[in-house]
Amino acid sequence: MVDATEIDALLNVARRDVLSVSLDVDPTRPEHQVPTPAYRIWLHRAVHQVLAGISGPGRGEALETGRKVLAHVNASRPQGRGLVIFAAPNLWRKYSLPFPLPNLVRFGRPDLVPLLWAMSEYEPYAVLAVDLEHATIAMAYVGRTVVVDDKTLELDTEDWQFKSGRVGTYTRSIGVGIGRGVQADTYDARVAERQRQFWHGVAQATAKALADLHIGRMIIAGREEAASAVREFLPEAVRAHVIGTVPLPSRATIPEIQRRTLPMALADHHRQESALVADLLAAVEADAQAVVGRAPTLRSLMAGEVKTLAVARDLEGDIWQCTQCEYLSARPLRACPICGGSVDQGALRQVLPLLARRHGAALEVIGPVGSAHLVDGLGAVLRYRTQRAAVESVGR
Ligand SMILES: [Zn+2]
Image 1 (spheres, rainbow, N blue to C red):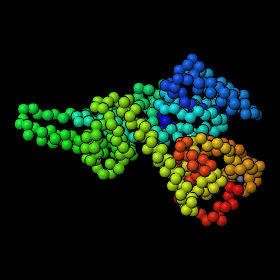
Image 2 (cartoon, protein in one colour; image 1 turned 45 degrees about the vertical axis):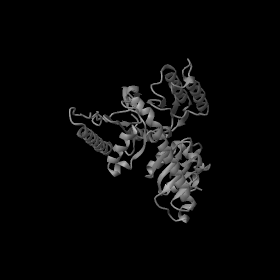
Image 3 (cartoon, rainbow, N blue to C red; image 1 turned 90 degrees about the horizontal axis):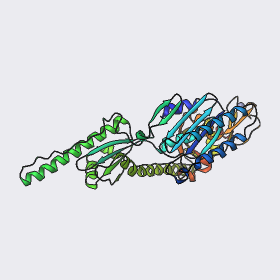
């Protein structure tokens, strides 16, 4: 399962001989339904290209790692729509995910950016599917995986789409019992009252589920009448978490609920990403607590000022880091200007998650739409700002 613990473990992989692969293996794409799916062809080219750039004593092992990855992808059918592999001698981590990932091959430190992007893009959300007589509170996860082999994590495709709570505790299916044989006027009144009680109960159960599962957003799905009634019964704090309502036929299946709600969850997330970038740019414009661009962001990061680091998912480019004092530069360096130590060149995207962790900064990986206006693909919201003069010398 891709979770914070897995990410932590990968962040702590200090080695620099890791082949990181992320792939869109979506079996619904026509180009993936042929004997040699397009992603395999892409992967072969990309792996050979990356390996061709490796020289020195590690080359033999890197080639062997590349062969192992290609052989694995050739031999196995995709378990989901996205695939992530981290491979090196004595290291093998594989994640099958229920959504496509950007195609990417990198060598060096593990490249966690695609996984971090996926965790943010597919952040859990709750769904309350409600009609006149039934309600289901469900939770959409990034993807739940089961271990099928040591060090190999596979996706159970039956399992990923939706979970009705951890052990089904939050699935409520409450029928409305209607007593027959009563007089028409009281009958209608009773139905209305039972209906009201039912929706009230549903709203309470929903509020409890969101609190228990620590889920911060919810979609209500169902017929207009039921959806708006339940919404009204929700405590105000919970109603604030409702990102929208989608129509849904009665007794929709879980995959149907997923299919109808996911676009809304994604759209909501993309709005938030765009808003984060817009706020950041506005703050920079106002000379407030934010920076954009590589050199200024790295300066602030090293100075410990960064609260949230915003990184474009498709960020490219290198970083130069002193091996002794960890001085950072966005421009090529021969030797460290601070201590004279030797300097390591590495891919920015493979270093940033670790740097963010070390400097106590939250990391937001922004998808292509949101990051279109993010200058240099990098920016940060600051906690505070040290005096300009004090930081100006850093990072130059
Ligand atoms: Zn140094």
